[in-house]
Length: 180
Image (cartoon, rainbow, N blue to C red; front, side, top):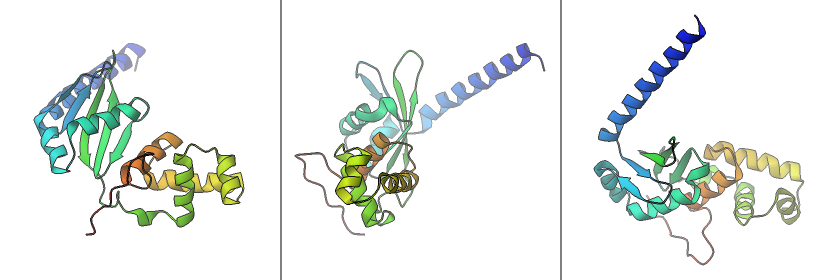
């Protein structure tokens, strides 16, 4: 295969992906947020978000808070796939989160303590000192949290913890989830 052929194959695959994305916008809950904050929400997304007991405005504010740095977010039981577009803007596809996304029992008590301190903005050394453990042990707990949350870094873990109710913003009361 020549370089020209490989490049044309890539262009063809890219066009097919864009065409598929265009079709998805007609069927799947989706929204678009421009860099200046303007947004568009399709009808499926409005209904999907309303069924979850949220407003589109709240959802968009959460996305804007962390969306520029993430590829995926969780909010309650909504999984959001974030796609940065050329020229700016963010396309967000909404899906139901896995059924275990809201379960707090997935974390150990020590992981919860580490997560709370992480969300408070403490460094690994500060967390280690506060919990009387080594920084290596803190790293092990963070690796476990990242794996359980399906994320890859501190910011995404903090946003996931906030969205799942493990931590709350200063000055806001934590909502109690109804028992099932």
